[in-house]
Length: 237
Image 1: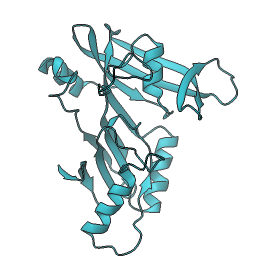
Image 2 (image 1 turned 90 degrees about the vertical axis):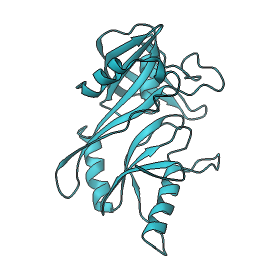
Image 3 (image 1 turned 120 degrees about the vertical axis):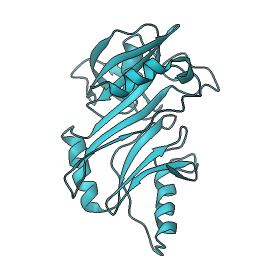
Image 4 (image 1 turned 90 degrees about the horizontal axis):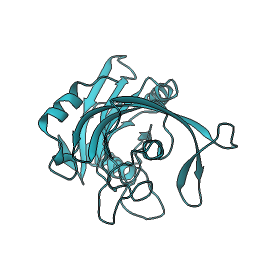
């Protein structure tokens, strides 16, 4: 896997660009002014293919700023439309790994209604029918334990802001290092990573699967043994 300004390039063709976003990089430009993924990869395409004008890249889905992992970008508007349709129909598969507090159940499914506060950029679970609230659904499986931590594989069925972080915290399984919705401390890196991505190629109509594990030499990933990671790789959700 090659890298460009800290972003890993997993796959590219005339329609798709599959990348690994590093933790703490915004997916797109925000008020911080920090380098963001979308602008960075437009520069990559412009430099590699010597494009003098504006470069088109369509953002199909996002990762929270502190979260690293796989993202697909569309290189044409047709690809963007077809990938966005997969997101709407929930056929674009996004699966994550997370290290959470406590011994999690072997499997589970969470359904909540989430409401975002745009002023504070926080999300909370509310009663169904609350104005502005959106349904959020995920399932998970425990693939390993290490002391007080559990390693989960998580599959999203909806793409709400901060969804995994809020839902797991509400279920009594806050993510390691999550200062906003858990008990993370300053300097800790949140242990949530977009490890698996599945989609149908927008023009070839072929199923594609991509895997990119988190940096397993970093905390808390390194506390889980090879058996847990082997189980995570073969887990189906």
